[in-house]
Amino acid sequence: MHPRPYLSYSQMILWEKSPKAYREQYLEGKQMPISRAIALGKEIADALENDEDTGDIEKDIIMGMYPNYEIRDQKIEAKLIVGKEVVPILIKPDTIKLDYSAIREYKTGREPWTQVKVDKCDQLTFYATGAYILTKQIPELHLDWAETEFDEAGRPTFTGKFQSFKTVRRMSHILSMMVRMRKAWKEIGEMCENEL
Image (cartoon, rainbow, N blue to C red; front, side, top):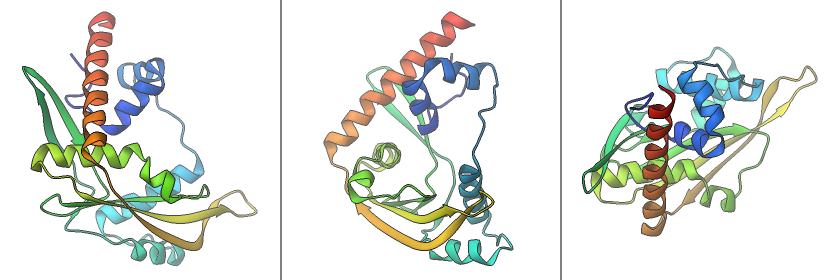
C-alpha cells in the first residue's frame, strides 16, 4: 500500500529527508508552505507548461530563453522491475524529446547553479533513470537557470542572467538511483502498512 500509485522524485527526496514530513504531507494532507521564490518558479513552470504568457514582459522574456523539446511538463510512467519486485516510477521533466533521448530541467533562483552542482543534481539523475528504464539509453541532460534577486519589497525578480549547463550521467549513477528508488518505495510501503 502506498499513498500514490507511483514514486516521484519529490516523494523520494522528501522521504529520504524526513519520513515524518512525508507522512504529514502524503498521509495527513498537510500543505507545505512555499516561499515567494518558489512561487515565482511555479508561475514560470505553469506558464511554460500551458504555453501561455504571464502578462509580465520580464517573465515572458525569460520564458522565451528556455530551450524546449517536443514534450513539455508531462507525466511519464516507467516500471523498475527487479525480479518479482515492481517499482512504478513517475517522471515529469520540464521538457523531453519525443524519443526520450534528451531532457532539460529549468531552474530559477538567487543561489547560483554551477557545473559541479548540476553534475550532482539528483532530480536530473532521477529523470535520466526513468528514461533509461523506458529506452535502455541514458539521455542527454541539460539544466537551464535564470538568476533572480529580491527587490526592495522582498519580491523575487529576474536579473537577466541566464545559463545553460550540459551534464552526463553514467551507468553507475543510474544503478545507484535504482537502488534508492527501490529502497524508498519499499520503506514507504512498510510505513503505510504500519500506519494504516
